[in-house]
Image 1 (tube, rainbow, N blue to C red):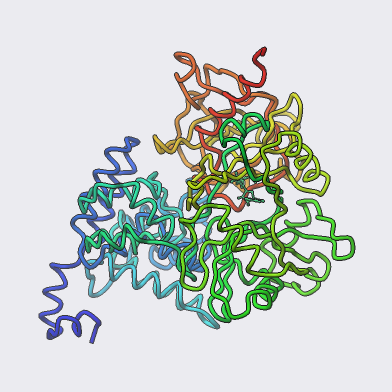
Image 2 (tube, rainbow, N blue to C red):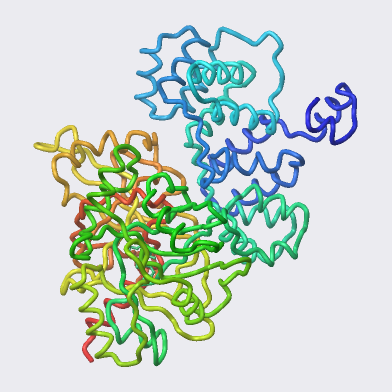
Length: 608
Ligand code: ATP
């Protein structure tokens, strides 16, 4: 008997009748997805989603994951485990068309969802007892696909998918395949989904909802809280061991004078380590390490897990820090390239741990033995961190100086560079200096080495388009169209064409890297005045340096803000060689940050 039968004490027949009235058909959701993908207006998207959420009952949780294009929150690491090739096999079995033929179609359109729609329109088979899919049942079946593991699991997964698709219409199939491959791309960010949830359940304070999500980044959980109108819980949500918190981020400024102007008479400078952001959760003997993007990366770092267990024996805590490779003999920090040899590695770990041991430099504590620390000022959190443990080979505290003396701070900055760091992170030391989950604000300001005439910092921009290469670059791209993210408008705005800094591996590897993100036309989420030869759904984030930021009539970043009909653009952009795989499109450099960089550049160059 299903969980619902037990819950409502019903006979299965009555339960089926009742269930029909409680469950949302997936068709209803897929129709709204179709409607949304035809608009670029955020208000329309929010309204359509709010109406949809308001109709959902027991299926709400499943529905909001679907809208995110997921089966579960990122930190649970649940993926279908089905390759494009296996999905194409299923299409072939359903339609009778050859795999080769379908693969050709896939390469042409670049979207398995569109392929599924076409295949289903002409499908030969039909399920004997065709039933209408509900959102909840579909979710359960997709989870079953994801959870199937071990020998024979691929056959099991493809069999399950085939049975689902046989019950689905062409439009439903399109969205099922997009969800399954993690490429739904409705153009609705998490913030838009949260706003739609607030609207659907008449919760007025959208900042509170966003804050709750930053401490508990599970959209299904937040949806249920809003639906149950548990206002106290929404207001009081805080850190909980085992649930990753969206990390606090820093603004940027190019010099100490501007930092002091923002932060007041006294500041704390900390070394800015260039490694892997590590949010460490310790619960009894269990340790989990989450990445900058809230993914569970524990398996990659058994050395850190061991050091944490030994250092914080008997404690339950959440710590924030940066893991950096350090030469075990000299204590010197290795350059960033060594970090990439550790990131993502799961095999032959023992040898790599010996060769590239990591040290975690802790700079914050968010929770200790049942008590949330996030509302305490920075200096109190730092004091707790200092009293909590003795530094050892694997775990240290970020080197820090608290001062109001600009000369001392300048010397500290130089020392940070000499010691192999990227620069410093300045931290506000006043009473208001709480830990702001998920926010980039002026409580933390980063300052990196000044490249004189170059921009003082690199930018992480997302690829939205490309131009065909000619001559030596034939078959590759001549340049990429890069964008920043405007969170107010929920749009990606173009900011430069990037054509330099590529070695041959990158240059000729880019078409393959970008293939999964291909879009037949300009995605609705992209604002561009330039017509690219190829369009991409914003996904791949690349680090670039540049000479300066200038006004530009062709780029849409900050359009009309400084001059009518002009946006701003990066001059002489150059790829640094670093793909930011730890960032998704929404984490790329924001339009607001580029505006601030432009303003502080103007301040720096203005005659005094
Ligand atoms: P960047 O591209 O400059 O590395 P980011 O976009 O990844 O930055 P930012 O918030 O802009 O993130 O820069 C702060 C990052 O610096 C943090 O995410 C963290 O990983 C790292 N970091 C290193 N040392 C510190 C420190 N002492 N305090 C805070 N963050 C630190």
